[in-house]
Image 1 (cartoon, helix red, strand yellow):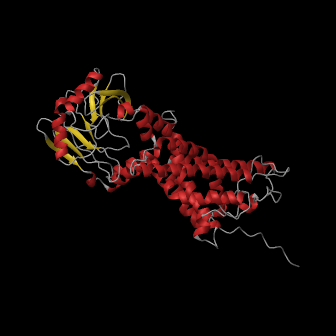
Image 2: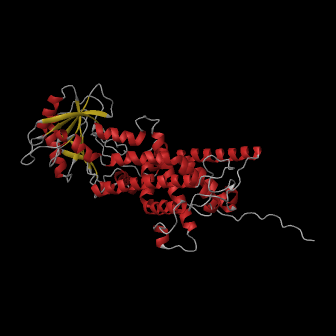
Image 3: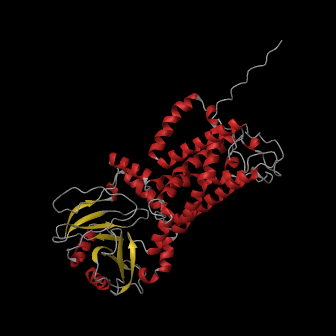
Amino acid sequence: MSTAAPPSRPASSFGPLLLRLHFYAGILVAPFLLVAALTGLAYVFSPQIDRVVYADELVADDPGGATKPMAEQIAAARAAVPDGTLISLRPGEGTATTQVDFALPTLDEEHARTAYVNPYTGEVTGQLTTWFSYTPTRTWLDDMHRNLHLGVAGRHYSELAASWLAVIVLGGLLLWWRRQRGHRTARKLLAPDLSASKGVRRTRGWHAATGVWLSIGLLLLSVTGLTWSRYAGGNFGEALDAMNGSRPSVSTDLTGAAPAASGGHHSSGGASGPSTADPDAIDRVLTTARDNGLDGPVEVIVPADGAAAWQVSQDDSRWPVRADSVAVDAATGEVTDRVDFADWPLLAKLTSWGVNAHMGLLFGLPNQILLAALAIGLLCVIVWGYRMWWQRRPTRADRRAPVGAPPAARGAWQRIPSWGIVVGVPVVIALGWVVPLFGIPLAAFLLVDVAVGALRSRRGKTPPVPVSPAPAGAETPATSSAGGG
């Protein structure tokens, strides 16, 4: 008499958990990624938009010949903004106008009233209220991308998108690699299977192959986006400080006090209080800075009074980046402190390069085109992902799931090898602590999944695995769960 063999435990594997997590993240986080891609696509060409919208303010007519002394240009700007306190300026070069920033009692510390001066004629071409030198249009597009014009609360959306983008990309790569085992070739991994019949298989091919091509760029966008996010960015800044990797700045204190390290992805503001510094000293300050090698576009920060030095910093974010800074004593015309970009800590350089690349500044127009391609590609991947979900929807009348089931059964975490749990759980907890908007949604995904599973088990309503029929050319959830997509 033979006895039935006990049911065997499913083989250990990370695949089902990766597949289920990729599914949940794709469905629930993709809307945030879609918005980030659309707003980022609009922002990336903001310099060109500025040149069209603010041509009168930004572009100097008939450039050429000698420029007017900076003191004369400042005087013209002062006449246009008589109630303002001079805080900073950016001398115009080529076809660019000179930008002179003034603090006003009606504006906060982040905003300024900027007068634009033709450097060749000394005439004021216009005025705008700017945010760290950004025009109103560029500020609007920047706010839309960062926080949807919802203030601090809106920053959660962009941080959530950046936190999960890398997870979704890496999970998708692993699933696609796993699915191609046994016949991995460059063509299989990098190109969609055009011979596949219409349906989920063909859609998955386009979804996965495009994701592979975009993967490096999307990972860089995720990492660089997190560097100035609210929570993960704060942790990143603390880590940089602990490793002495923050961006250094010159000391403008003529008594010799050490400067504080600076950060952020926008230029620093000027003096916060009423300035008593002599604006006529600007030409001497600029001459000293030029004589000390600060060529190209520069920004000049005006001190609050004659007891502090003027700060002149190169303002060229294109490769090779020019970001040297000097502090100049206006009374003597001597450089009192200097920080060269070459002397920045490596982490500070990497952060600067990454942020400039994320903003489309590092390599100019090619950088902008690449970012636009990444945004459009991500939009396509998202659309294909939702299309797969729709193509895999239940079609039998006796199925109780209204839209579709995840492509892997619940309890997938139980198939993880023991060593994976021992190593992975502490790593995930640490990552969730450092990147809270990854950790909190992940915990929510797990809790919801467990709760729904427990509720269905209690009610005895766990839907059966579909076997037929399915849309023409499509795979059922049971067959598609064998691989990733």
